Length: 93
Length: 417
Ligand SMILES: Cc1cc2nc3c(=O)[nH]c(=O)nc-3n(C[C@H](O)[C@H](O)[C@H](O)COP(=O)(O)OP(=O)(O)OC[C@H]3O[C@@H](n4cnc5c(N)ncnc54)[C@H](O)[C@@H]3O)c2cc1C
Ligand SMILES: [Zn+2]
Image (cartoon, rainbow over all chains, first blue to last red; front, side, top):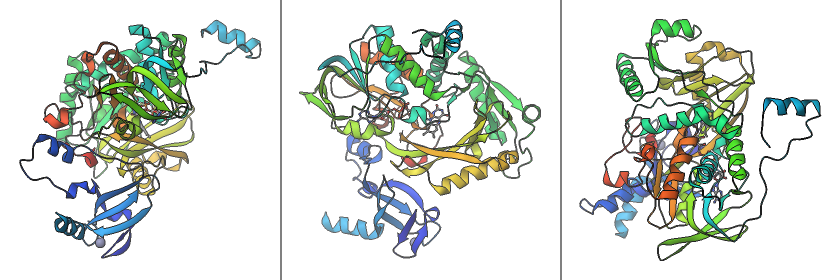
């Protein structure tokens, strides 16, 4: 598996650290209550198919990336900088 | 049909023509008292104990593929009860006791082999932790022996003791642990359940769960709708998807774990050896192949095949521990999809839907759990009460933050287990 880092280009999967579903970028506000935090911290959609997830290019440029990957085939359809995704989320809310 | 030495002899002399299928192939009925979704080890053992211990025989196991085609036939067959962690330890102890009487109970040869499981330690701290674990195991009536480096050296002279990174300080030996023939475990439970009237229905995928006013009514399948008052979900790596049919989200990510087998060799490895620091464990099968594995791939996956980086990592770890295996040729490797919980421990619980039960999150260690899990889940489904051995396996332990069962002490975070 190779990931096309927007800054470094196509790199071996071993340069990256996996953090899980990118839903983690949508961090709830403090004091939102137990259920919201439980959902955020523990529950997962866990689809067999396209999933947006966070990868850290720790042996490269150090960026956090949002990688859209098919969990059945490992085919990657999109890679974006997490910073950009986060900014777009901020613009929306 | 009962198996016995005499029967084997008679069949051998008459061309083995008298053997019959081990279970029926019935059509699904319109309604059952209970339905088990998933014909893996846990589903089959649940059905068996529901029928045997609770007299519930109007039940069906629905399997989308074939019985035993999932993880129950894909694992590295290790059976052990050396957890030493409150809540988990008692459960695996219970499960191991069931394993010890399993073949007699099922009248089926599961090739249960209590060859001993040795966990190696590589630092003072790890040795102390093993001493504590061994004490807990001994205190609850199980077996554990702390071995010095010298004793390990006598037992397994072929290990690399002077390894610069992980020199071997000793080990925790659990003699009652070992391996069992995984397919036979599924077949034995299937046969036992079938003999007690359970309908085992293969090629029957559950595609929906029918719920009315918070009460389960039955399931939709590729072979039509089937009604039932009770439904148990036991689908290993597919738990999230089946739970989603009931509107549930689970604390689960699916990850792949690989296994490797070499060509058949003469007997060289007598025990199960685990090298936790290097993420490697190994045993030798009865056919002579070295069976070994390592870590998860650590990212979500539904591809039942491995990846090269982890393969390389496992081979390196094996070579580090026992350079002698370097010339053995790897014949096969494969992967299985496992549902990983944030704390690495399973879930056996009721759900918010009345009559709907879930048994999931067995992570990389659920084969040894097959008898205990079936027993506990059957108990829960039949009586509505948690079995004492599995009472800690609650679904809400993440939400309430109490009773996390964190095997690896890495916290409640998915990608660390
Ligand atoms: C490589 C590897 C090595 C392992 N090594 C060990 C080990 O040494 N010791 C140990 O204790 N554990 C080990 N494990 C873990 C263990 O194999 C699993 O935890 C355990 O087998 C899971 O339970 P099961 O047997 O019921 O699952 P499965 O056999 O996978 O059963 C689940 C069944 O549900 C069916 N299903 C799914 N969705 C549906 C649906 N919608 N409708 C109908 N049926 C459905 C599937 O087809 C499958 O047959 C290992 C796992 C792997 C992958
Ligand atoms: Zn980069």
